[in-house]
Length: 405
Image 1 (cartoon, rainbow, N blue to C red):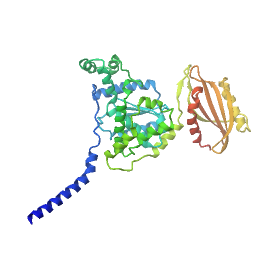
Image 2: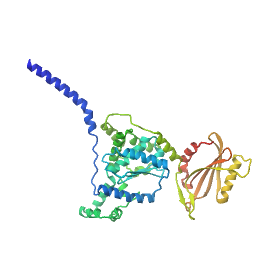
Image 3: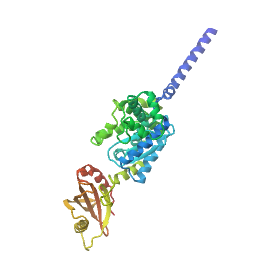
C-alpha cells in the first residue's frame, strides 16, 4: 500500500513538474534574448566619443543640415526616447540631427552622433519605420562598429605595441588616425560597414524597437518598401549599408525570442506633422552669392503680389508680376505656360528659365499663381535646371497641400 501511495505521489510530482516546465518555457526563452557583444576594438569608450565629436565637426563642413525647429525637435525627441532601450548603452552623449538631403540615408558616428536624411522622413509611412532607421544606427553605435572598422585597418598596418602608443597619445585623434590613413567625415572608413555589421545593427535595432513598444518588424519592412518604391533614391543607402542576406527572415526569426507577442505602436500625430513640415520645407537651402548677397538656388516660397494696374485678372496680374521680376533679372524668360486648378480655383503655371546662383548653371523656376482676395498669390519652386525634374514630385506634394483663402 505504501509503495502505491509513493508511486502516486511521484506521478503527481512529475506531472506538476512537467506543467511547471511548460509554463516556464517561454519565460526561459524570452530571458535568453540575444546577448549583443561588440567586436575587437583598440579604442576606449572615451576615445569613441572623442573621435565621434571630431568627425562630427568634419561632417558638418561637408553636408547641409535642416534648420527647422519642428523637424529637428521631432527627430531628437524620438531618438532620445529610444536611447533608454539600447543594450550596452554606456552613457554616450547621444545627438540626433537631420541632413538636408532627399537621399534616403542615415549614418552614425562613434560615440552616439546620429544623422538622418530628410529623405527618410519623406519616404517613411509611419513613425515606427523612422524609429527603426534610428534604432538601426544606434545599433552601430553600441556595437562600436565604427572604431571596430578603424581598429582592424590599423592592426593591418602596424603591430599592437606601436598602435598602443599611437592611441595613447594626447591631442587630436583626427591627426593620429590620419597618420595611418583613416580620415573622418562622410567618406570615412568608419562608416563603411560590412554585411555582418549591418545584420548585427538590424538585430540590435529590432530589440530596441520591441523594448520601446514599436512594431519590431518596421525596420526591415522600411528597407523593403524603399527598395520597391524609390529604387533610384535608395542606391546610396545600400552602398553605405550593404544589404545582408535574408534580412527580413533574420529579423522575423529574432522577434519571437524577444518576449510575448504584442501589438506594437506604428504611428503618431507628431510624425505626420513632422513629415508634412519636411515636405513643405525647401529641399535645398540658401547659398552666398558672389557679391555676398543671399540668393536662393533651391527651394520654395509663397508670396502675395499686388499689381500696379487695377482691374487685373489672373493672367494680367501674373504678367505684371513677371515683368516686375524682369526689372531685377533681365535674363528671366518664360519657357512654358499652362492653366490648371489649385484648391478648386483657376490657376496659372509658368516655367521660367534664368541663371542660377550656382556658378555656370541654369535655373528653372516654376511659378504658380492664383487670385486671392486682394492680390495674386504666387508660389515659386526653384532648382538648378539639371536637377529640377528630380525635385518635381516634392514640389507637386507641396502644391497639393497648399490651402488658398
